Image (cartoon, rainbow, N blue to C red; front, side):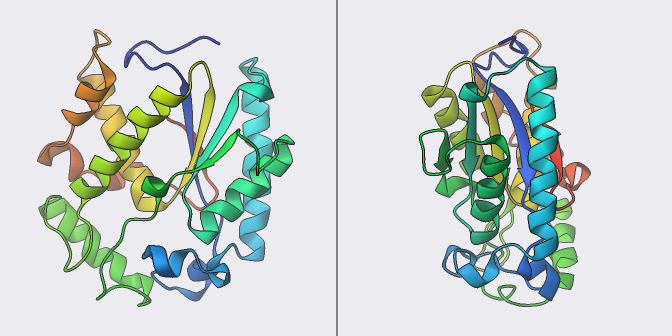
Length: 228
């Protein structure tokens, strides 16, 4: 498989935001691991359709890039809405969801917004994002700041790079984590034209100027996007 060399990565990466979920339909913030893994917060019927379409699109991308299905890895958040999405995509690709090609990773979980936001209206996201732009290192009370999420995602990328080689990796996660992941990977590409060691280049992106702008990389539900 042809590889991009700007970051010295061993794999190629795509990201997929979960399909429209029951929390999306209800207009609820469901961000804790405890709530997020409950089966009642899986995909809505529209979200299942979105996941299927994303799987078909990814299959087309794989064909266009001459990537064999045996070289695909799906890494997904343990939340009900993301594991449901990953399961649908695996089905479209005809990859066994319970097999070694699909891996749940806790650090791909949703950003925890804290108890004052949990199970409240998703209209409150605007408050969080205003805070992020002002200071991506400031945590909402009891929750995660942008840098907290960037830290665990950077670690996850290093772990995936250590575990897999020459694979097409699909990361199935959530809106905020995927915005933040795209932000740090994009900044790492710009700041690393010589292909320096990936873990150090990704850590170097955790600055105010980079992290405060993560909303520029927003994804729709069910949206597939190339990462690196």
